[in-house]
Amino acid sequence: MAEDAEPLDAAFVRGWLGEAAAAIDREAERLTALDSAIGDADHGSNMRRGFAAVLPALERDAPATPGAVLVLAGRTLVSTVGGAAGPLYGTLLRNSGKALGDAERVPAGEFAEALRAGVAAVARLGGAAAGDKTMLDALLPAVEELPGWDAARQAAAKGAAATVPMRARKGRASYLGERSVGHEDPGAASSALLIAALARAAGYEAGEVAGDG
Ligand code: ADP
Ligand code: MG
Image (tube, rainbow, N blue to C red; front, top):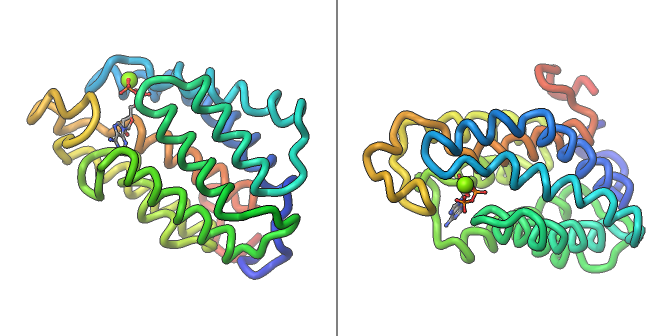
């Protein structure tokens, strides 16, 4: 799917969240292993529990617009993920959804703007900035590329990898100080999964040549 293709509808967003839930489920053990190195070994199980609750919630309420799908998904994550990541990812999706309003179909550029608003809300809530070794190190460079879906996927993966040499300045990992260096941040890793899922929903498989879809 090209970046300037059809406007995006509720089914597209549901498709994204379905891809995200599947990826989180597949990678939960890896996320928890990352969190056991610099946290409390719960990130994978937190995220798996939360995303497993999203699809049933969407089936139950069947929100009809992209914005309403994101708001309901965000609300579900807040009440099911727990930890630091629950409110942060909940804020990401809820604020992105609110930014979309009640349009039934949204041009990709507006969808990108909405996700940038969501990421800005995450930064406000958590008080973190780029380089603090958090999910923002994957999210910020990714949303800058949107609606370049595949470029965003690559930027998120690169951003997550770039957290390895960083020293954590926010969240639980910051208690470790210098000992947080040398490990990938679990939240940045899960954010890279969410952005890769978005690229997949838009028609890109990992490794595919951009523009090929
Ligand atoms: P907890 O740290 O409460 O156990 P999780 O393990 O689920 O929660 O999530 C940890 C992740 O949350 C971190 O890897 C980091 O990416 C993210 N995080 C923690 N604090 C912040 C913050 N203030 N701003 C942005 N992201 C944060
Ligand atoms: Mg944790």
